[in-house]
Length: 348
Image 1 (cartoon, rainbow, N blue to C red):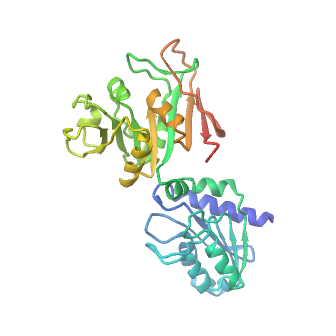
Image 2 (spheres, one colour):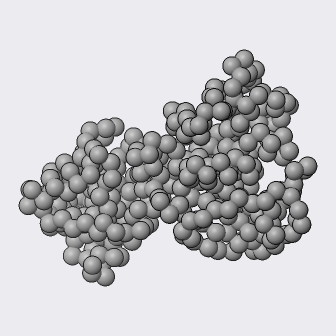
Image 3 (tube, rainbow, N blue to C red):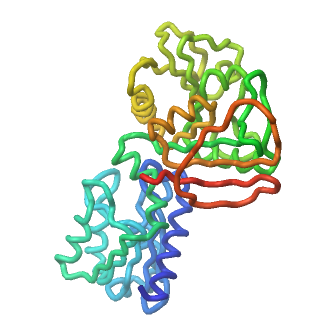
C-alpha cells in the first residue's frame, strides 16, 4: 500500500470515530474522496438511520468539483452497503457518480453485504482494492459485528482493583480509583447503552451509576434482583433515571421509568438469555461493572468482548479477589496514579 493510501485510510478511520455511539447499531464508517492527491470530499456516518459515510462524502463535494468525481478515488473504512434499509445502497451511489477507483479497508462481515458490493463494482469494471487486514478498521466495527453475528450486545467488563488484587470488601463500599480515573470511568458510561450490576453490589454500594463527572446521555441501569430483595429506597429503584430490573418475581413493584425482565436464573443459558432480552430493548453496548461474582460468570461463559482493568496503588490487604481476565492487551496508559489496561477477548 502506498503512503498516500495509508494517509487517506487513516483519515477515514479518524472520521469514523466521530460517529461515536450515535451511529449504533450501525457501524462507524468514514469516507474520503481524492482527486490527484487533493481531498475533494469526506464524510462519516453521524447517526443511525441517516446518510451513510459515502453519501456524506459525495454531498460534501463542492459544485465546482463535482465533475472530478468520475476521475477520483473514494476511500472507505468498510465495504459499502448493498441492500435497502433506512437508506438506499451506497454501492449504487458510487456507481451512479461514476467514481472509477474504490479503496476499501474491510469487507462488511454481514450476510447481506459480504463481498457483494465489491463484486458488483468489479463486475462493472471499477478498480477496487480491499485491505482486509486492518486492525483499526476491525476495531471500528467490533460492536456492529457482535450485534449482527453473535446476536447479543457488545459486552465490556470494567473493574478497578487494588495493588494486592482485591476489588472490594464484603461488608462495605471502598474507593480505589483517583479523581481523574473517575472522569474516565464516567466517559465510558456515557458511551455505553446500559450498565449492569449484581444484587450484592446494589446492596453494598447503593450506586447511582450516573454521569456526574462527564457530559453525555445517561445510560440505562440494569440490576439483578432474583428474589426481589432489594429495598425500594435504593437509588437505582427510586430515582428518575431508567432502570431495568432482572428478576424471577413477576409481581415486582415498579416505580416510574423502571422496567422488568423476567428470567429463570437457574437456567444454564441464563446470561445468554439475559443478553437476548437486553438486545430486544436496544441495548447494543453493555458495560458490566460488578460485582466479582457477576463478572466472573460472564468470563466463565466467555460472554465478553473487551475488559477495562484499572490497577490502583491502594492496598486493601483483604476482601473480594479480583476476577482473572485473560485476553489480548489492546492498550495501556496511566491516569495519574492509576494504570488502565484495555484487554480484548482473544476470540473477538
